Length: 218
Image (cartoon, rainbow, N blue to C red; front, side, top):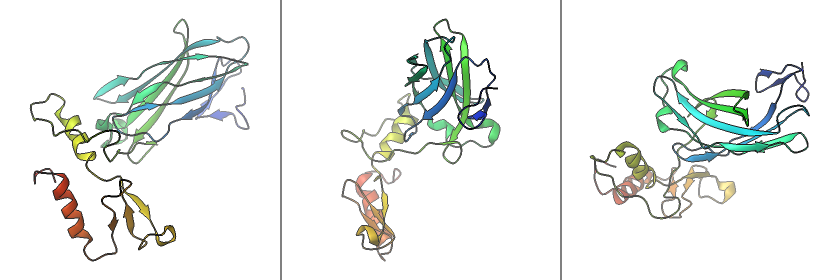
């Protein structure tokens, strides 16, 4: 057995002495539903192992679908490598009803000939495994328009239509200079909300009515 650092386990994998490649770090910065996410995969290879290949990421929704991401090339330098594949976490994986239907991120590392050197699988969801969050606010540019029901991609576009019009609230406290310990700040500075104030439900309703022209949207 080859020890990985101080323990014989890396990401739950036991490595034999003949392991051709070892993944030591996977970085997934602030993953958000239905947005491209760049992963960072780092590891080590022995001297007699392949020196280059490909890292492929894909998401698997059991019983629903699989979605491959954008692969990345890896090359070893002084026995180390890193690669940055891109993947998208479908919002359909947000509400898994049980463990067997939980979404999975699969990472595979191959050599130039396509020979599999390493595979890892990690669950994701809104409350387990890799925690994926919604992205509120318009982001760059203007909020998208309301899609027509006949649009073939209506569900995803309507989801973005709603989320882009909701503030990306951040909690703040009196020690941060907020009026109360139950204060939500809007990074855009337009809809700050003090949950300790008596009129916060009215202010919230007014904000929603202003941002959504149709009552059934709000």
